Image 1 (cartoon, rainbow, N blue to C red):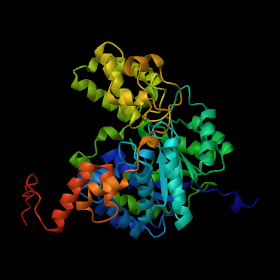
Image 2: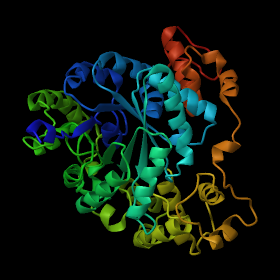
Image 3: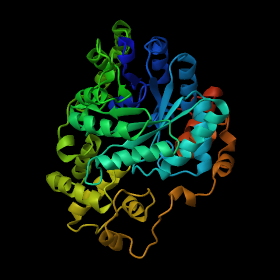
Image 4: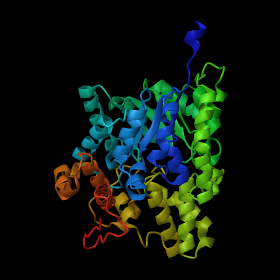
Length: 476
């Protein structure tokens, strides 16, 4: 075999425009800050740039007073040679409830037609039924327009049910459902280096689809995990430019590029170009530190994540919930209760929203002195099957105590939701200036309506601080 054939450069997805700032500065990076550096980023040779979806949609409308669709169009205009990628929460799209298939379908269409190439689709329970419609919609668009790539992401987690066989079976099912690639999405940094070797090797033998690995530096092992995964044959890794890398973000792009330089996995990226890009982001990182937007706490290593197999964000939520109740002394009791509640609820991966559901219920169980004396609305929804099917059966004893005699859902929850696009359209028609507005409204009705009012006021040059939004009087 010639030297050229033996080369298998590792591909890189850059996260600085989405997950890196979502993880470190609560998704507050504005579009206007992104635009000047696009030209340089476009020359790097990335497999893709992740720049949309996840929490960016909500944060743009709610905090930055920006239209997320406008951001996507501007990024698309700037990136001439690089694929753009988004994160999509299956049937929940980018919102916090399941939507009807017609809304999912329309959102996929509009995402791709406005500039997205790769849609990474995940479900908090790894219930593939909640991903199928988004995959189908992407494939329909691709058949018609020749663009669009459906990547199904598996939420990585630990537990009795999550054997190598579980992961390889899932890989085969994802291939059968028509996805273009698979991502292992390790939100909590739980995948350790030698387990990555086993996992990637097993999945590569189970499927022909390309495999991408996404992790977070929270527990301190992520760069080593990438190294072992690349050696085991993973196709793509997610990294972030160094000023917004590490901590709860991803390993640094420049470090991974240097790690593989001169090996068969050499990316061929130009470190001088990467240095110029890092120089652009560094003053902004310093500004975020100064303003308090970037908290030094999220930049360290949280070893408890590995010890308790609980995501870092979930640990800090538990601390703040106990603080509110003046019950910080119950922290370790709650930590012991978390795996028990998780088992009762069918051992779901601990990601949004299942991590919040399990954590809050564990707090109630400890503080009340009796398990499930009080159950949250979300715990009840989980037990009813509203979120989907869990990998293990839920505790019958808990079901009988919390939702006695109630009917449980065994079908895909979205099958019970009537088409809702035309209803949403009629609710918000007075604000509609573009087709995409109905989708912003569908996901965040109140937040989007506030944004539409703000947008109209800006167009009419109204000072919103002087506007009486109660009576609808807007001084010019």
